[in-house]
Length: 315
Ligand SMILES: Nc1ncnc2c1ncn2[C@@H]1O[C@H](COP(=O)(O)OP(=O)(O)O)[C@@H](O)[C@H]1O
Ligand SMILES: [Mg+2]
Image (cartoon, rainbow, N blue to C red; front, side, top):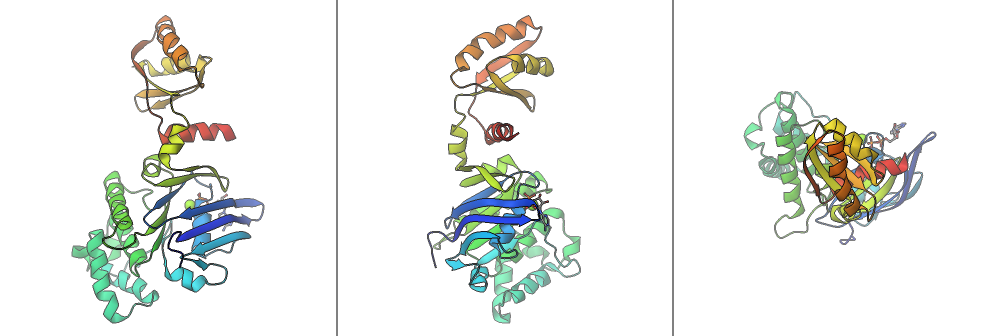
């Protein structure tokens, strides 16, 4: 087993008719590392993950999971994989424990093994006291946690999660991430290698590395801090009234490439090396235009800024 790179993927391609759902994806993920597939609907995240679990056959490219070649040793590869699909389903009429038992048996755990392991994993996800509740009676967040538990029952070294937090409330999202982070650093063992897909930038920021996906490709790939650094010194935050007027005035500035609302403020992306010029003249223009300025300052770029920048390049 290749312990350095539990996940190795090179130049993966998959088309559905004329649609290139995955169009040349390469990635490596180390143990204890979390890689984010970040992109909006249709970017190719689910197809990539389905190729990684061997649920789909690639048109071209190579996949090695725990050192096993997916095209020749799929069964050995899958034994190391835990997968939570985007629309996974539990057996709603079965209890929490019965659901785990089902997935444990599918994974070949013996009776002696599955019960202690199930209790351990339910404890881990915080569902131990609900073990006798029917899955259909769980809240959305609890269902997601049970889904995670079923994916972990056989102690996989590699975990693939397809938008596990889409549509769940912010508190549950937070809980869910705490669980994933704990998986990365289990005591005295190598951590799990995780690939997670998400449309959310705040989640992308929590990954060790991300790939911004669009049309089956990575537009940009790397650690969030490195991606943000590409826009260093080019983001201004502006607060004042009325926001729409400020946005129009800022947007008309020859050195402002983009002006966008971020809650109650604006983020401006400034042309390279033009920051000083913009900081000097924008307050004057806003006053002349009848707006009031509360604050204008340079801020560190966020992933959202990077993503917006990218989206425009491609349009
Ligand atoms: N089984 C399929 N048959 C035909 N087209 C598909 C199939 N699965 C995905 N696609 C298409 O491939 C593209 C990528 O889809 P998907 O991987 O589901 O993206 P994401 O998960 O990022 O939303 C989309 O254009 C989608 O419509
Ligand atoms: Mg998807």
